[in-house]
Amino acid sequence: MKFATIILALAFTCTQADEYDVIVVGAGAAGCPLAQTLAEGGLKTLLIERGSERPESSNNIAGWSKVLRSECVESFSSKGVVVSTGNCMGGATSVNQGIFIEETNGWFEENFNSDKFFDKGLIRDAYNWVRTRVAPKAAYQITPEGQLYAEETIKAMEKAGLELGTVENATVPEYGIWRPYTTFDNTDGTRFSADKLLDRSNTNLVIMTNKEVKKVIFKKKGNRNFASCVQFADATEKCIKDNGRIYLSGGAFHTPQLLMNSGIKEGGDIYDNPEVGKNLSDKPGTFALTFFKRSFGYAEITLAEVAANKIYKDRTLLFEDSSIGEDSGLDTILYEKTFVPRGLRDSPFANEFIFVSDCCTALQASLGGGEPLPQQCGPLFDNDFSPCAGLQQFSATTCLSKLSFLAAFVADPVSTGTVTLNQDGDPIVDVNYLADSEDLEAFGAAAKLAYIIKNGMDPDEDTFPEGTSDTCPNAYQQFIDSVLEQAGIEDNPLKGFVSVVQPNALEALALSSNVEIGSAIGNSAIISPHHFAGTARVGDVINEELKVKGVNGLYVADASALPKTPRVNTMATTMMIGRIAGVAYVNKRRGARALRGNHAADEGN
Image (tube, rainbow, N blue to C red):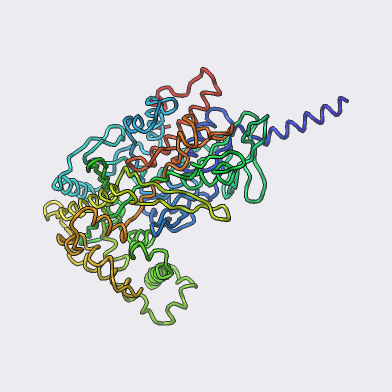
């Protein structure tokens, strides 16, 4: 009898050793600060990432565009608009442009019915904790050229009627011109992505990469369902202890996917909730361009971010300006597929053109003594380089390396879309951009003001000796026109659109009202900033403590919990959610012992 008792005790101990206090699914902007906070708080935490470790190229600003079409990014098409999410450690914080800006207390008061979870003090403490670790310094001002560029942008914005605003502690002003914080170090351009928050020496933290969670497993206690394990594609499982928690931090696409695949959906066998995957929110955007007379490196202009807000009727318009630098202009254009109108972006022609462009870029590098030409490109040429003739005139070493973007967005759209599943249980993304007529009008107003600002970018020789280029806009337009001609497009919706630095750009399109402008650009050159939110929002899918309705032990901590996309870049707010969720649970487990304290006491650690 004693022997049997010992065996049972040993078996129980082994099982417990394989279980966790918390499992966090998704090592992105929210999952990393969440897991770090939980492990710091003494909880045995398993952090699971479906992708791999970050590629080396993502560590520095000079490589950010190189990861856009890597395995670190998962892309979908929303009716021709490229929409994407991070797919490696750090999530989108490992591949974005590093703009770090916080939402205001007023935004949270307006969009949450109570402060039960999103208490203003907790929010600011969580923002502070994140910022002091990943964005400790204000916007880049590395070189005289970068500072002059920023000053010229601000002058053009003021000329267009925008006012100067003030950023306090990285919080966005309600309106005006401001300099965002950044997650790139302003001495050497090193990126501080969310995964750098992780203390990998902490024995409470276990990290798994390249493991895709397919669903959450529940066990019954009476008539209630309790989350107990996560199941991987190979049918193996990892489990939590009794009274533990599973947090879904997969983002606005994959968190609702996991909920639906786990039986929490309309007509779900675990819990019937038709709101899962609805309310998908993102900012519709477009851009205006400026080309300079010479190319700039990343340490010169890219680091001079300038942003502005403007109220148009009851909508907020957001503008963000930065140079791209070196060869990332081509990377960005190919990634967003802005070289063709929206209706062609899902066509075989667009993908074929990207293939040819990549091969021509590789050809240039190989002819210059770089890497050998990739084997798959060989048949394209057959000793004849004619497919690259058009691209040579618009190569990564000419106009695109002289390019700056002024991106324009509707910051607070009301149009919403959905995330649904295909027959294999994978996401189908429909953002439903510009479905609301007021969004459409605001989008046109944002595009029009972006053109006006860029037309005002005319630095004289005393302040910016290189000046702007008169030839590159025409070259870029010819490039676009030739691409569409190759596709057999006779009625070119982008004709005259790209040369937006020319004063008659809008007249060339024969457009007048903001609705007409919004409709034309929405069908041709609309882009996404990839600021997705809302698909498992508080009130509909989860409660204000982030617990999934209808079940126990399952929580959501990422941007899908938000009621809609924040008015600015989502990175800071998503990381804040991860931190605040971790603090709340650690404090709950500790009882009276609090984690909040004074963030300044450990600033910079």
